[in-house]
Length: 235
Image (cartoon, rainbow, N blue to C red; front, side):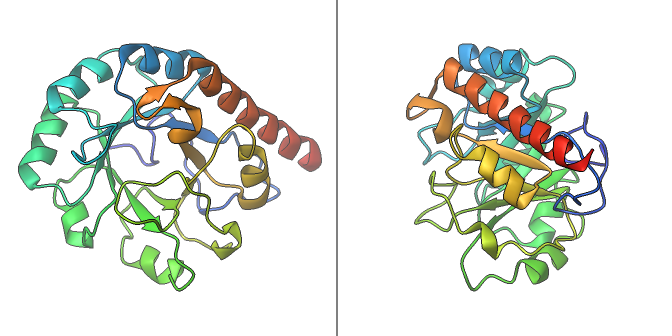
């Protein structure tokens, strides 16, 4: 199993990047359901793609569809499967279909629920003002990362930005910043939070579930621009 959320990434000891340790921010493009969108994410330099197995999402894919989409990925791009209170059978079928799948839990899964498949996983945290993120992280010590998203009605992310000041600096797990990101605000998010990775879905779409290749490329370019600014200040 990889020691970091995405297999091609270097390990890190803290959730938010230390100012004296410049490192490339990883990029996950989530909610892909078309071959052209997978190809666009790979071509733009994404480190991971997200496949949504939550049937109430407009970006939902079946296990067979996920197998076909993941089959287009080169070796160093990681498939991530998003689940919301999913039955164990669905998770098992997805892992069998996509052997290198990293799991991402977005519902009410307990620590034992997340550990049961014995697969690398990310745990989503819905960033309400009263959430004690450090306590939440302590309940999922074997998670490969915490994916921080806005608190919205329903599950699976709602494309809303949350208050980044709610994130403590000493999160004990790698942090994946999510929630309403797009090319216009991801630089600010990276400069302020210094996450291990960023996750985008609706921010690179032409319509729900339909990605825009140009928007994906602009997003990835903005992430690289943020990293360049950080490197320049730390040189």
